[in-house]
Amino acid sequence: MSVASYRLSGAINPRGSSPSVCVPAFNSSADNYTYVQHVGIDDTVVLFELAELGDWEPVRGSPKAKIVDPGNPAIHWVTWSDDLQNSVIDTADVVRANIIANRWLVDAIDNPFERLDFAQLSGLYSWFADEAERCETALSEGERKLWLGETLLLSRARFAIDSVLLARSAPPSIRRKLGLRLRLASTLVLMEEIRALCEAYAADYIGDADINNVQQFLQSDVAYKYANSRLYDAAPPIPVPYTAARWFKRLTISDAQRKPSGNQRGGITLVAAGFPIDTQTYFRKNFFENADWIEGKTRTSQDLETASIRMKASVLGKDMGVLSFNVTYAPNRQSGQANYTSVLHLGPLAKAFSRRDMSLKWLLLERSATGEYSLEITDNKPA
Image (cartoon, rainbow, N blue to C red):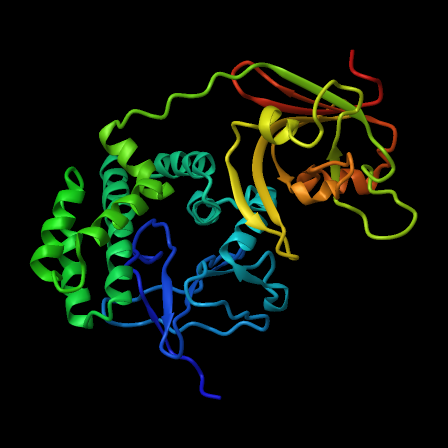
């Protein structure tokens, strides 16, 4: 069996030349699949980068590589250690949920530009915006505008256009020529420039329908949306009014990860707990309704939605600061019974739960009128 050869299919600024969001995609000469960069929590973070125009960076293999059907979402390769044997590689939906679930690990990375890579792969605009604002503070005014305009806006446009050209089997000369012209495009009227450049240099490969698809892609892309808003004061989305909410429960042995046998769940079930709510829908449709929910699949191909929630946390009187908690919603969990569908995963509190038995303690979740969340674990039942 021959070793597949890979080529970069999107023009993304490489890390090293300037602060950047590095999410290049690669195409294999042996198949029609698309593969997306490795991201890790080590110092290098990005394994695959484009060194020079026209010089392609090879893709390393993975000990757990999976093949997906053409047309399926791209493969992401994410590691939470330097050991490639612990790599997670799967379709985008599965890995996106894994990234969100491990946001509390990403929060520990010092470099905001590295955290931004994870935020972009997560697809959560609120997470990306939080990290991007921190990145901006590390740049001078000139660097900031260059980063927003060239690294975010123009590179995402080049990525989208080049992906279309690759799918149409356009010659490398046309792809590179158009890519160079796009580097000089005006970000103020970017879509008009994209249409004009495509008509001038790639009319045989890109039509009106393709331009419309590119525009839709960019409008939903977290990096593009953020940069466009910051550069041109685009009106932010009007926030949906919040109604203050409060819920609590007494932690069971399973919630406390103290089952005498079997695997521990790693999270706390969100159930009625005596409140007049619909357990099956309340936490997804009401309590956490306005969080950024990402659709995905479980390992058994069941529907799964995941949200990363920032909460001000307190455990038995100790202020833990603002932490990232993963909440998952899976309708199949109820199994035709009145069981839970939502789980609050312990994440950053896993060590606290391993050190101390939290059985019969009380968990209190609150959402303020301004949409801020808090989590508190107490000895006594909340008043």
